[in-house]
Amino acid sequence: MATFHLRNGFISRGKGQSVVAAAAYQARARLHNEQDGLTKDYTRSHEQELLESAIFAPPNAPDWVFDRERLWNAAERAEDAHNKTRARSARTAQKLEIALPHELNPEQNRRLLQDFLRDNFTRKGFVCDVSLHGPHKKGDQRNTHAHILVTMRTVNAQGFSAEKPHLSKAELRERVNHWRENWARQCSRHLERAGFKLEAARMIYAHKTLEEQQKIAEARNDLEHAEALKRAPTLHEGPTATQMKREGKGAHSWRVDFNERLAAKRDDLRKMRAELAQVRETEERLAYAHTPAGRQARLARIHEWQRDKLDMQQARARLQQQDAHAWARREDAAASPVLKAWRERDRARETAELERQQAEQREALLETQTATARQQAEREPAGEARPAPAPSYSYRPPKPAYWSERIRRANQSEAAREREEAAARYHERVMREQNTSHAPQAARPEGDIKNSRDAAAWWTDPKDRDPARPEPETPRPFSPAEVLEKLAQVRKAARTMREREERQRREWEEEREAGRSIVDDWLDGMMNKKDGPR
Amino acid sequence: MTEKTAARLESLRKRKAQLENRIADAERQAKVAARKLDARRKIVVGGAVLAAIADSPGLAAMVKTVLAQRVTRALDRAAVADLLGDPPKPGPG
Image 1: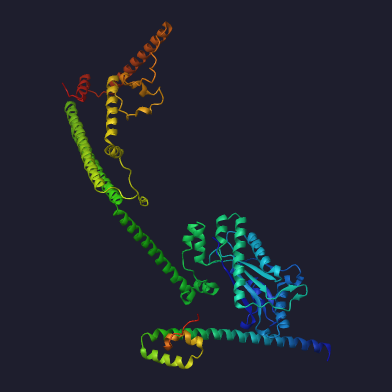
Image 2 (image 1 turned 60 degrees about the vertical axis):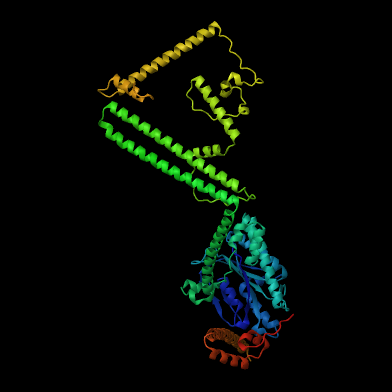
């Protein structure tokens, strides 16, 4: 976001300052001061590039105000002519230093400045000498800023007026605050016009103190900005201190020193805030842990951890077994096929045994856990509802599917379990009757079958049929033509199958190792049979 | 007096005024610099003395005497009331 900076000051003869010299510097010009006969030439100093310089004047001003040299010499002369009491220590001009929003290009910035100056100075009869300076070569490249010199007296067609507006300190402060507010508003308007909506929304209150800004940002729900505003204000270092810093003499400037210490403190503060947040979070977690719900959650976590551990152990055991089997297979390479098949069967048995054992282990663990959880739930009925703790974003590996299935089964009611088991039994029977080897599907509740063409509808046992549901139609007998067609189809299918079998047999023949007979294949087949060789 | 002489006089007078202005400006700049340096010295000395007071009660007594003699304005006395040992005055309101 654009930096807000607007600072005012005066060019005062009382301090030995000359407005002509100041104007020459900021406009990078060569100007002659008639008061002391000196000529200041800043045309060749280019540390900060001069982007633009212009003079804005009220419409009734004479033409000479647009000549910088004549304008400021006239301002000096006006003090001599009209200031009877303190001509030699008078203020000859007001100076403003304004940071321009870096989002805008020079042309947009020029229009922004024009609006601001017209509202605050030109309309009231003052002349402004504006210079836009670019960033220093070694500094922040967004530091485009404007130096503005404003006459102390109003200008009309005859020249400078004899009266000089005098402001008390309080009035001046009020005036400057008004300018700051106006600058913020104008900036916001121009940023919005240039398409920077967010910056515009933030800029409109940027003239306030950091605390006030933070409150406003929070009220507008701009929390990111509010967080960024949570800091102690730094001191404006100014050109002298910045120059010292560039030359490596930062510690000699107390402003730079102060800012550095502030930055260090800010880092400390940020760390402390983070720690505080951690402590607070821990407190909350502890408080939650001592409620019944918290204890339940803790038990669930422990159970999860136990299951994870068991998973890990079992996976390791399986891997070890696979490893051992692989080594054994390697050793068996030289053995006879019969022996090899025999041992392979042993290994398959071992694998099955391990699987069974592991399933038992899981079952046992789950039973223990369910019992513990039930006990705790009976001992402590759950307390009042409490929002779940904030999610942790650390990585957690996904859990195996069978745990969720088992947990679901462990937690379901007796009736539901019976219902489900009955469905499974029934399903199994249908499977057996149909002599299919499909994997048993999850049982469907009764009302779930919507489409009568669903396969499940055909599996329904006639005895269990819902009387409200119409009987499936019996197929009509085929006509002779259809019979012939079907017969042709069947013959074609049979031929295809025969061909396929023949092809496969030939492939097998080709694949068969030398020295291996059909008997070996038959023996292998016998070995792989579930009941073992006869 | 010829025209030439008058013009010369005029330019010399202008030159004189410019030189006077330049002298005045230089004097003012010197004055500002001197005042800045003076203020800086006061701050440095005051800071050092204030820091040393904490360690040496003798110096504290001396400072108290000096302040009691030299600080006469009420506002200034209020600013250093704790060093003078003055009783705190009831505030306005």
